[in-house]
Image (tube, rainbow, N blue to C red):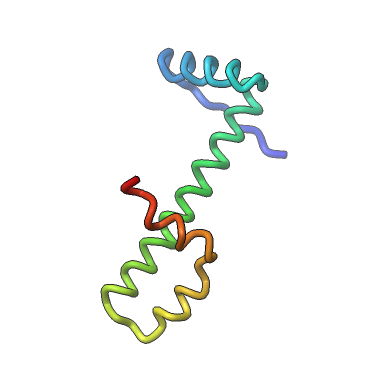
Length: 82
């Protein structure tokens, strides 16, 4: 397992500490979980961006891109405004 030495400003550290306590998790465990979640959201955002780009360009491979997106993701795409 790799280690990461990270310096946080006081406000960020306090917010992270409060959130970890609320979740009843150790600080490092909680920070790692948040990083993983952020990376997953970023990956999902990139896949959606590529799909939208293909859709706008009316590319022939847009159907393949749509197949690559999980069905649940397509359902969630309409819920951003809610």
